Length: 152
Image (cartoon, rainbow, N blue to C red; front, side, top):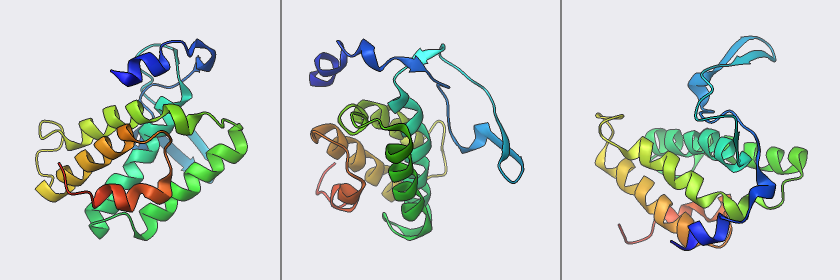
């Protein structure tokens, strides 16, 4: 409930967004020539939604391939995050992104969408959700401690 009240007066953050920005909706042709596919859920929202939608996949694949937040996918999340901050100038995103991460991670943890995912990956995604929602600001350097929490 705290997130609802924290974000409800933030209409100043509304921008044109994609709404379903993940790796399977980016079609690369050659080099940096690409198209973004399957825009959804309306034209306006918080850019944090698109940032979370793409970034959470780096976490997901790090969990699947490394068992934790390490390796090349962890490096990609950190790089994506720092480049987004540098190029967008969006210094508020870290304080508003948590519910967007929660929604995206819930999709990845859902056995209907990902029926063959391991229990460990699902549990770590839930730890990420709760840890991110409890923090005042998102910091990718805190992901490992979030994943190692004792619950859920």
